Length: 357
Figure 1 (cartoon, rainbow, N blue to C red):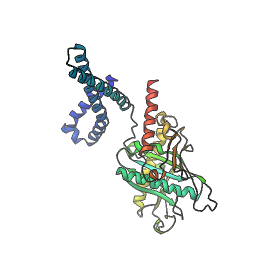
Figure 2: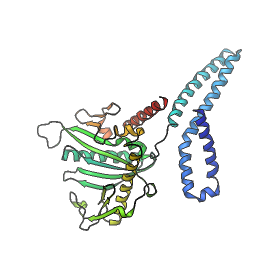
Figure 3: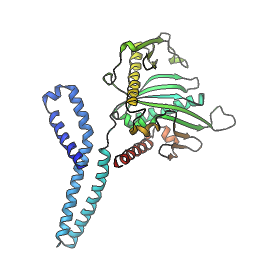
Figure 4: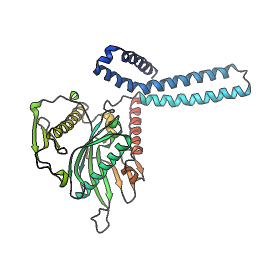
């Protein structure tokens, strides 16, 4: 581990020197790449510095106690320093093990989220709206920007499907574990007997990518225009401004009808297409879904149930890590960090176990 830390320290110093050079500043692509690497190395270098400081204090106290001849008060102080520095060394070592784990290269990206109603008809559509609201409120708490790409609303205020972008720093690192089937258990407003119904929706979280990350042959694309539809009001458009893009080799279809401008709808649709093709390429390269993302979607099948929201018990249960919290309203109002952080920690623990085997 020390060898890796020393290499990280050396590389960090090299980057600092390069960032101050005029040639680097004038090359924006190189400058951005070095800044990204600098940002990823900073927590490692800072924690390594803390580790070395603790080691020095430990050795100093150890030597003082070994030499003997200390006054009782000084001996007690040296023993306290020895014990505290030993504890800090252990804490730093554990944190450094996690910091040295291979990073998901997509963690710093913004995301595109797709929510689709599953079993349960209108009740599923209403819950799709509840989850969209949850993610939107969470994004607001984080200072991220949310923009709807496409939606298919229902008359009762739900969504058969809705896709939206969430832009900000490190969004994918927080939200990547949300892909899968979310189940809701509650009494629908239309249920006269007061019986609890179970409905499901599926969520897909895709890293938002640039054109340079995915190569698309324009000849492979089929563009179609149509009139915006939906539940009425602002969702209805009399002109054919909505865009459907079909990537013929893969069969992937994306749509956008949120903007009045056909050009803006096309831009949003293409952004989603790039993300879908990127995800498909990553999945193919790693054999369905990469092992390090196993906790994200379990077996890699989006039909797998990952979480249950039980209204009668005010309970949220994440089935992948056996986490149960009785704070349903808080979570649906965007207080999601306890769930998201628990998933991240479980993922890191699984990776550490694999490294140590």
